[in-house]
Structure formats: structure tokens, C-alpha cells
Amino acid sequence: MNKTEKRKEEHVNIVLNEDISAHHNYWDDIRLIHNALPEINKDEIDLSTKLLGKRMNAPVIIAGMTGGYSGAKKINENLAKTAEFFQIGMGVGSQRSALENNKLRDTYGVVKNYDIPLRIANIGASQIVRWKHKECIDNVLKIIEMIDADAVAICLNFLQEIIQPEGEAEAKGCYDMIKYLAEEIDVPVVVKESGAGITYEVAERLMETSIAALDVGGLGGTSFAAIEHYRAKAAGDEVNERCGKTFWDWGIPTPQSLVEVVEVAKGKKEVIATGGIRNGLDVAKAIALGADAAGVAQAMLKPATVGEKAVAMEMDTFFKELEAAMFLVGASNIKELHEAGVELWI
Ligand SMILES: Cc1cc2nc3c(=O)[nH]c(=O)nc-3n(C[C@H](O)[C@H](O)[C@H](O)COP(=O)(O)O)c2cc1C
Image 1 (cartoon, rainbow, N blue to C red):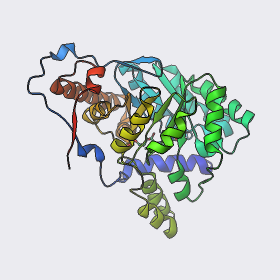
Image 2: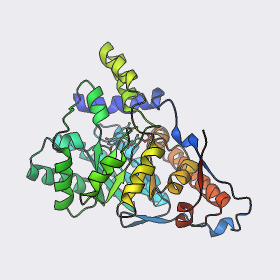
Image 3: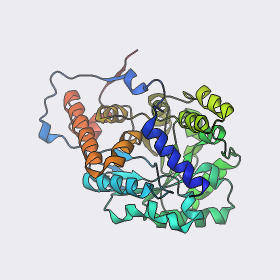
């Protein structure tokens, strides 16, 4: 196992064994408004929606997490089985390692064996910025082909890059490369933060590009600074251990980032809310705040290491909770949920 494979395995193991969430989950500050006279029946509730041109049974995607070491294949397979069964979207983790080592392709490519309505390829922004233009297109087409993807996510992960010892904190030229890529390839491009959120101003810049969607990836759930804190601790690296602790709660809370990005996107680009989504009620809150879908990572990872039944049970619970929230606000479909009232609970 080389260093990259080892790092990917460590990331997953730390998430499974330590508490690496931000210290506050900001979805707890949002409350949907109860409707004591909802005037709908449970069986009329329709959770289905469209995202990036694909029809899904609910506005939920399993956010990209893993691939790139042997143990990741089973995790991606268990997640893929659930995405197929529930007909929802699914992403994989950064595919860079499979571009460098053909033997790892399978750890991502396994998702091709399942009839998933929306498969999302993934590559880090800190990676594309290091490629020349043609190299970038070639590599992105390769990762799309690797999982037969319907969309590709460019992951903004600069918090992680600056904290992790082997990080590549090179962000110069990133915007131009995203813009170029989105113009050149036919597959929809999603720009995705991974825990630190996107502001109104950054979203405004991204609106000038041909990307199809923004995933706000805000603060409140998995903290990569926390993950790197634990990695550094295990390696006896005190500087990075402290640095990870200092930046543990860095970023823009997901609901706040969502409201800012939705305001800019105004229906012209789709918006996904990832970061701290723990259940179907959080999904409902995200939709009510204007998201087209919610992305969930950590909550699915633990069950995915247990087995396919455990992931299916988790997702079944998400569906039931989303349906319950819709019933209790009197929304019979996703469009009506968009219009449901929310209040801040401080
Ligand atoms: C173990 C792990 C690995 C991840 N790797 C990636 C990655 O390679 N690319 C990416 O875009 N996001 C990655 N993410 C971030 C997730 O997609 C998601 O944005 C983040 O975990 C916040 O969601 P959560 O709070 O539901 O976990 C990873 C998350 C986890 C838990």
C-alpha cells in the first residue's frame, strides 16, 4: 500500500473511530414550522425530484467519500446498492489515485455495476490546478468513464490541503481551470466544498462559469481539520495536531452558506446542501431553505462498513423522516416543501 492509499484508509478509519464532527451542528438552529392542520394524506406525499437532469426518488445524494485503497471497494459497493435500491444519486471520493494507479480503478468503478440514477465523479480542485489544460480535460474524461458518471464534482478542499502535512495548498488558477473545464466538457460540472462552505461572493464568481450546480459543503458535519488533527496525533506530529484543533470549526455553517448561495443561484444553477446532514429532517430543512437536494456522507459511512442492510436501513429512516417532516408542514411534494416556512431557533 503506497502513501496515498494509506492516507485514504486512515481518513475512513478516523471517521469510524473518532468524533470528527464540528462542535455545533447548525441544522439544530433551524426549525420547520409545524402545521397543525396539514390537510394532506401520507400516501399523497411525493418525495421525487430531478437533479442535474436525472429523476430521483428523493432529493438526497450520498456524497463522495471514498475509493483508492482496497477496502474502499466494499464501502462504495454497499453505498451503490442503496443508491440503486432507493433510486438516489451517489458520488465517489477523489479519483486521483486511480489515475495514477490503474489497479485502484475498481475501488471506484464498482458503482458502475448498479443502476444508480445519478453517478458523480470526483476530483480535487488542488489537483486540476496542477494540470495543463489538455491534460485536465483528458483526466476528467477518464474519471467520468471510470464510473460511467452523469456529472463530475470538483472538490474545493483547501482547508484540508493547508492542514494536512502532505497537502498541496496551491489555489492559484483554480477558478480559471474550473471555468475552462465547465466550458469544454459536455458532462455537468458541480463545484463542491467539503466542509468549509461557500459564500455569496464566491458563488457570484462561479455564476459566471458554465458549471451546472454548487454543493455548498458547509460547516457543521465532518471536519477535515479534525480528521487531520487525529492523523497528526497518531504520527506524533504536534504542530499539525494543534493546527487541526485550531481550525476544527473553520468555515461557514451549512444553512448560512446555503441561504447565501441560493440567493445568488436564483434557480439558474442547482444547489446541493452537504455538511452535517444527519437525518431526513435535516434534508427537509435544507430543501425548505432552497436546496435542490441534500448530500449525506458521514451518516452513511459507518453503516457502509457494516453491510448493505445497514446502509439500506439508514436510508429508509431518512426517507421516513423526510416524509414525516413533509406531512407535518403540509407539503405534498418537493416544490411545496421549498415554500414551507422555517424559523431560526437561537
Ligand atoms: C472519509 C471521507 C472522505 C471524503 N473524501 C472526499 C473526497 O475525496 N472528495 C470530496 O469531494 N469530498 C470528500 N468528503 C467530503 C464529503 O463529501 C462531505 O462533503 C463532507 O463529509 C460533509 O458531509 P457530512 O457532514 O455528511 O460528512 C469525504 C468525507 C469523508 C467522511
